[in-house]
Figure: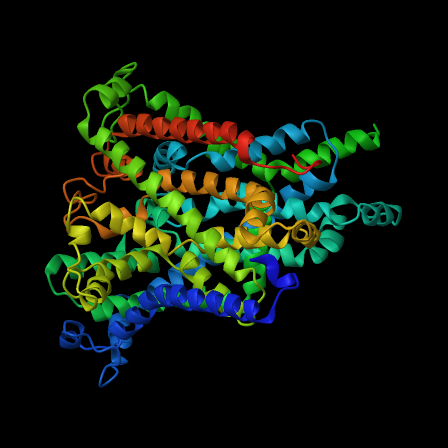
Length: 288
Length: 304
């Protein structure tokens, strides 16, 4: 436990550390195994997938499974679709949430606290409550089977991102605003030239979470997109699964290759920006 | 007319938050009111709504065995998955908090599954749970155990989904880790001077100090667990649309049932009523937790 900071006999430290490492090794083995297995299956040929016992390292790695799955799905088309939705969602979220968070953190106006609590309270509202009227509404204005229902709401703020940004904006000294005002700057200028540049780490965190959320979104595309050519990667992978499971051609090596390809952007994003992830989650969790 | 500074700030402030305000009215409050109204109607996609009063709710609680089943399934899932996830996440966070070399790598390993695409993860686990060729039963066979049929068995499908959910505890683990790092070292040193052993220090210092994080993670876990959908939708049933939630409706969770009512049977009125019951359930569970939390969650002076 925390006694590693306290003085204690040498041998005890050694036992403690090896115990900690041993349990970590076992646990991380359990966590890595499904990933490793998925990757291994994705490099087998069909008989290899069903071989008993399973060969973790295939005799010949079938890298062409990856090429095959990209032609089985219109993979690049789906990637472009998903990238478009994700890019616009991230842009909209950053823009709207930073404006709103600026208003909630730096301007004084009547009703601010009440409105902010309302904003926080909506985080608890399950999406299913608004889902059906929203679907009917979007359907009546002809937006179903387009990306608009997935993108447009992002330009109107999301409570969690507003909350994260507001917390960060509060740590930027108010004196900056006063000084800028003396120089004749308006609020919009303070927002754009002072607060936003200082808030880059928080903006990066919000962008990351929004990226992950949008890239991985399943429910939204599932109910709003009908035309196969509009599908996102996630939706496409699920369609492929239904085909493969449905027709009895159990091409699990191809499905696994598809799954690996879809997971990659998340893993890369995480590798590049680990710190922002950890900070963002900790910030959300520690509000008490 | 010249506005006073306060007046100007009032208008500017509202202008800044107006994206959220408009979004709240159009995408949240409006639909909420419509949805509440719709829950008292027999609204299908094909016919205009007719007022039926409490009929939807009466049917739900009196004459809908599938709804009862979905409630039981959800309760089973939440009551097992959430406590298990919390204990496991806390355990991992405690070990990771030792500041031993290489902890960053382990942290990454435990965290990664929680941000990977849930549909891809679900597809991976369908194959992990395959009774004959899957990773899990193959491993069990090595130690001489014949594994169950997992997703193909009424009694093992829910436990399978719970096992899979434990793979995604990275988020709570990070929250616990951050909370652990916020506990002042002086407290441990003082306790050690007073002769408190590791177990005593954990119970008297660590647990109370991180209790707000545990509370937060439990609340989030319960809210998320009550809305479990994607795994069940992707992993269960045959390829036949409408068969999701199988076998024998053993993985028919409330949100999956709601989805099927709304988007496969187009019973929008009934589905709206289901959504409101779910909302009330989430509200009650959260309020009860909040009530209970007074007994065990410790806030330092000044917080909250």
